[in-house]
Image (spheres, rainbow, N blue to C red):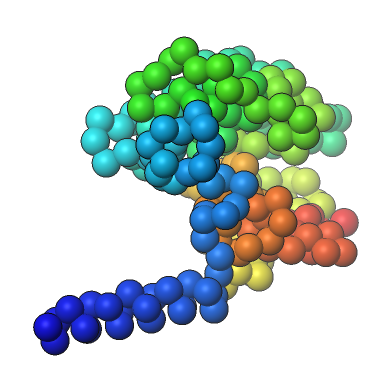
Length: 206
């Protein structure tokens, strides 16, 4: 009985910590537990599974959703100093719903779903007018560009440096700015508030 009481108290304390220090995916835009196309009623299963996960994409922990095979039109600009390539890593996972080529309900091995993202959540396959992703953002790029902070030394405002808190293997990805699990509780699943362009100015010095 004592061990059960300790366990219950621990669960309650963890819940209080979560409420005090951040939000959760529950009730967020990525909470699909109550969607009629998700007959499992589970939250995590649309993206993650403990068994038979897709390991073909890096930064894809226990991935359970069909992965896009689209080829994208990339962002380009005369002032762009980064070396661009097709989206990879976690950005490819985001696009596996947001590019509109893969159904949201294509998870758990299903590939014939019919629920697709629309409206302002649909990014499409033309990324030429979107912030570039999947490029290496390091001290060399910052120096060459002249308008970016050095990610290895500049604080992110999230506890560590930009490189430590916002980059994935030194690459900027969708999840650099968007917390898919809603840990910050900020609108649009941002990792932190963009009031007065604060998020943008984390990396951009102009």
